[in-house]
Amino acid sequence: MKMVVRDCAALVFCAALLFAGCSKDENPVGPAPAPNQPPPVQLIGFWAYTSALCNAHYIELCDALDWEDYSEYAAFEITDGSGTNFYYYEFDADLDVTFSNSGRITFGGSEFVVTNGGESYSGTWSLSGDVLSMNVVDGQERITLFAEKID
Image: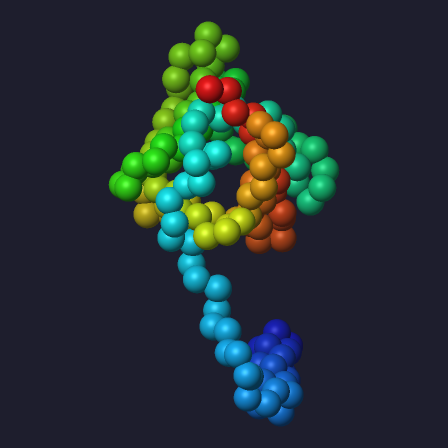
């Protein structure tokens, strides 16, 4: 019950700010568009996951990616196709594929959205040389995945 009261109070407060705090904008700006652009050319290629952070602390890749018990490595490929253009792979110690799936990745500035199998997740990305950083918020956890371009 406390949560309902708190949520209602927060909603009323936000509404009051919205109606009382602003005059008409000279240059109105709408919400940022959803990422719907193809991959930037510098991201097209094959990438190997190298490390991960959870709330700024290093964690095992297997925990961040929730991979199969017998998987040892994970990688992904981004292509420039207009349909399926994101491919995820897990490999065992002999580099045999143990799991794979595919989907669609779209971009809008530094934001991305990956959709596969009816699931979707979004986040931000940045590139430094051949190292790609991807940030995703999952509940109370901020996951940062690092990948290195290998092709």
